[in-house]
Length: 248
Image (cartoon, rainbow, N blue to C red):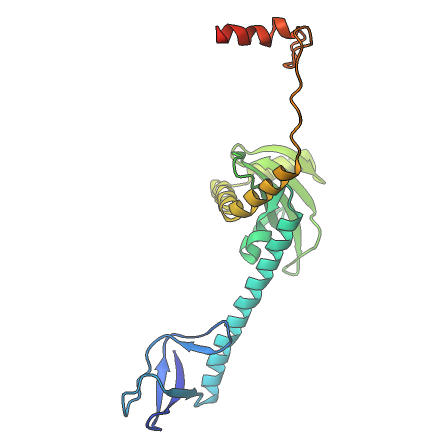
């Protein structure tokens, strides 16, 4: 609730009302969703508002601060995502934080130390993999150190470690085994959300790369050439023969 003084421009009557839904719009002006009616003449449109007390200025000031904070975060997130998409190449893992900013931060404790887990996933539209790359960043005084301390790459569905950098194998296994079913489900949900969020952008990037790849002419395989399947047999005694059998 925000208390405001109103002055009717039709009858010059002044009155005080508490407004429930007062927010700042994108233009920085106060927006009041509910209808304001002059208590004297019933005018609905022509009025001005002012702040009657310092406490009310503070209240509206907080509304404005929240508006500006949201605007700043939205612009920052948009910039982060835009830059990350510029760097992205098909097949690379995409960092969840680059798409969703502060909501992306995951916490994990290892041997009494607190870390942020920065998770990246495959965002190729047709890929069904369940892979995640986790960069563990140690906290210092509640803030993250810039560089990752160590990295784990694993299939989160079966808890299979594909690669561990800057950490010994036993510690890596212990970390993965410590992941609860809730953590594994969270990886799954974040992976799904990230793919859905970036689907149009990644599809557009893929189309751009496809246009850059020239079509190679099809090579004609001779009957006596080695079969391209790698069997070591001649083409006429391998896939060509099977192809003829299928056609017959």
